[in-house]
Image 1 (cartoon, protein in one colour):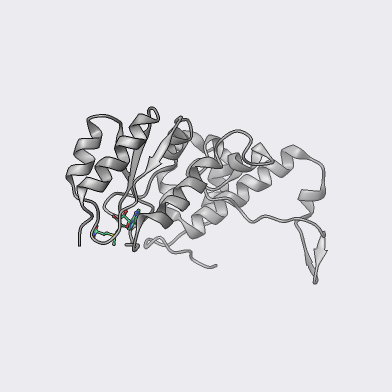
Image 2 (cartoon, rainbow, N blue to C red):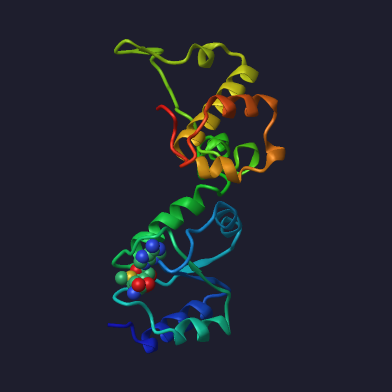
Amino acid sequence: MVMKPEPWGEALDEVVAKGPARLILPTPTRSAVPPVRRRALAGEERLVFGCGRYEGIDARVAVEAAGRMPVEELSIGDYVLNGGESATLVMVEAITRLLPGVLGNTESAVQDSFASGGMEHLVEGPVYTKPAVWRGQEAPPVLLSGNHGAVDRWRRDQALRKTARNRPDLVAATPEERLDRRDREVLAEEAVRDDGQPVAD
Ligand SMILES: C[S@@+](CC[C@H](N)C(=O)[O-])C[C@H]1O[C@@H](n2cnc3c(N)ncnc32)[C@H](O)[C@@H]1O
């Protein structure tokens, strides 16, 4: 079953009447939306998501809409959902948390996995909060040292180690110029097998 074009055309008439918008059509047929695209979308004034169901929306809807607004197909991953609504929720969360003021601590988004800046292409390392000791497990003492330089370096080391273990493909994609001498030492310690799996976890 395919969604008919007429109701979509009328719904988009209403959207256009309310002002400029970019139409996002969730689809499983694309590569997962990359971080750089999410950052660009966070700067858009108005995003409208057209959620398909069943086999999807009649293909003429996207063609007709493209004549009056930017239209973009986006996926959240290589799996098929029943409808675009849950994909839209995922995208809205991933995009809006990049907007100024959405997160209490603006540093959080910078340190996130796949964030922009120095951590690009890395996943975030392990995170800790109080208490310093919980059920016999100590949080890493460097985090309580008050030495911000040492904390930043430790965080980057941990991010590099976790990325090498969990996502060696991202290490391979990290541009050489983003790695300093210490980065290279850490990655050399985290040797991965030829099949991309960690030597020991
Ligand atoms: C059952 S799916 C249609 C799948 C389609 N027949 C195909 O094989 O490509 C119905 C709707 O769910 C949404 N959807 C499914 N998987 C998705 C994904 N991975 N990312 C984004 N949207 C998805 C799309 O809006 C799609 O039109």
